[in-house]
Structures are given as C-alpha cells and as structure tokens.
Image (tube, rainbow, N blue to C red; front, top):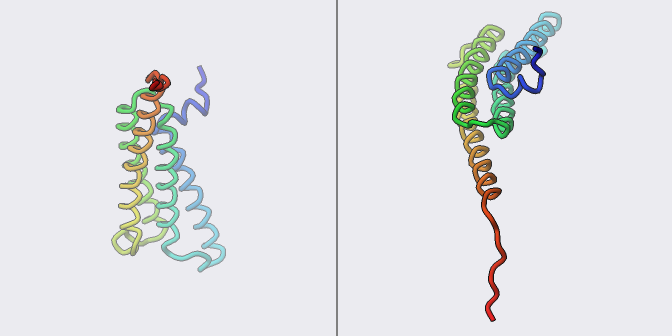
Length: 147
C-alpha cells in the first residue's frame, strides 16, 4: 500500500527529513556556486540557512499539529524530530562553513531563540485547538431577557 505525500507530511519525522534534505540541497548549491565564483556568499551563510530552515520547520510543524489526533504523541515526536533536525543542521552548517557554532557569532543565540520559539508556537497552537474544541462542545443559549 502506497502512503500519500499528504499522509507522510502529518508525521513530524517526515517533516524533519524533508526540511533537512531541502537544507542540504541549498547548502550544496551554495557550496557549488562558491566553488565557481569565490566570495559570492559570506562564510556564515550556511549558518543562516540552517537557522532559517529550523524556523521553517518550527512554523510548519506547529501549524500541522492542528491535524493531529493525539497532541501528546505529536509533541513527543516533534521534540525528537526538532532535536535531530537541529543537530543535523548544525553539523551541515559547520561542515559547509568550516566555522563552529561558538565562533559563528549571533547564530548560537538564534539557534536558542528558534528552539524556544518552536516550543512556544507548538504550545500556542495546542492551546488554540483546545479552546476551539471546548467552544464546539459548549452549547450556547441566548441570554434571558428581563421583563
């Protein structure tokens, strides 16, 4: 049985894999362009790409969490997927730039901000989903008029 693309993208693991592959493609393209035209992009460009794709994953994953049936399972899979993506992104950026995260300037703090932001995004979406579910279950009646 073939699993559709839409079904796969509901899984945080597949989302992280897709984002990591896209990041690797962009970083490889940048490396190739820098090989042909030296000095085209800065040496911290790979860190910018890694951070941008982590932010993209955070927003995409938070929005797609609305579709999940069990938020606890989705949260757990999202956290592990994010940690894996952050590790892979950092390794790729370090490999392509030759600069460690400690010497990459503000990107160390951007990694932290995006990571905290991811948890905030995921929590906000879950909170909004809980409010909507409560409102859908609640029976609303018109207020009684005083005579």
